Image (cartoon, rainbow, N blue to C red; front, side):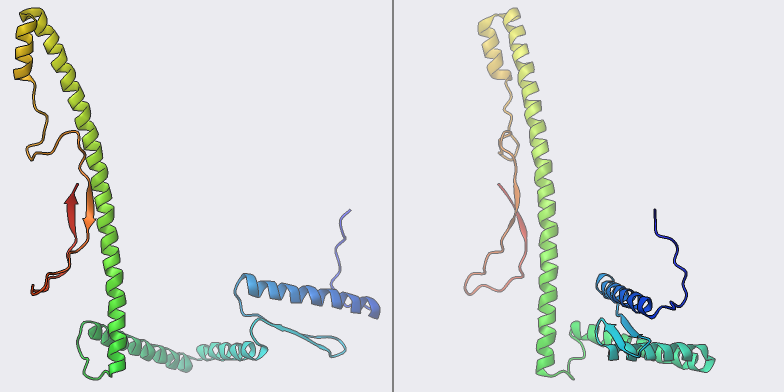
Length: 239
């Protein structure tokens, strides 16, 4: 049988009351610790026994928890007051304007504008940020080009397989034609007709039909001595 429902009221027996307090206190402290760990919550728990003994738990520190509680409680109280609410939103709007101004100034500095007020250290930091951003852009660009080349190579492989199938069909038709010519014109004339009519299955650009086309990214070549510097480019090569 299951446990019966416990009536929530003060336990008259002092011994039973102390045992229940000890069990419930340990369970409450355990739950508070689990809540702070599992949910990344800031938890503060304060317990005073009937004899005045203190038991507490804080996920960070009890002082920071109490200060945060008092701050939030004060802000909540201020929001209930219309005048305080107006002042609160005015401060929020001023803070957002400052953040917007900072972002606009930083954007202009990234574009190479308004650099006169910056120190050497600030300029070095800005240069490092630009180099990190440029590396990220180049990496993304190379990844996109690599994916496109893989897709082109895949399509080229499929086209190559289709060409081979067509070549087999053409060759089969040619053999059938040869057999028919042998039956009609004889072996000698059929061989002569076969030599004349057999096509040369190559591309106009000189590439053999049976050789697949493969694309890959080429590395930029370093400039020769006394040659003007050129911007780095990514190219495609045929193999």
